[in-house]
Length: 155
Image (cartoon, rainbow, N blue to C red):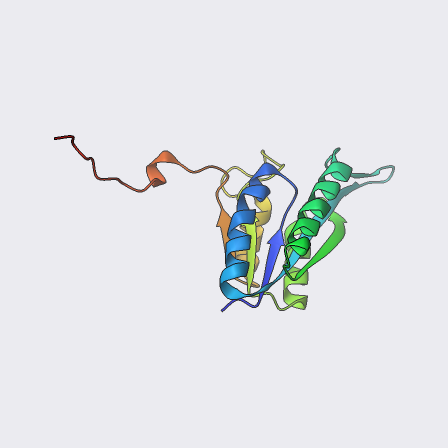
């Protein structure tokens, strides 16, 4: 069912929580992977800087994750792209269309806490753009979502 999977990551812990799902899907479907990281830049008359002050560290971390997957035999490509602040979802959607992706996997919240009150601004936009199905992995597992267990009583 899935031949090409996109993992869109901002390098956050939330994005990392979606990585095991990506690995499972790749194994199950024998799919290839495109890892996309958008470096968001704030542009102005006198400024052109990355939105995240630790951008270099994030890029190095993502590159290590990609190298690790490649070393495990996963068919993986890495695309680092730049966009203006707030444009990451559209850039990810463009690349997903270009690569004919069957699925986009993302975390539900990343670095922008104010803009990600429910799902995360990038995740929410990807869902609305509708270029491919989106698997949105929650940042935390809510206790109410845990499977119910039968209580066993000792005899």
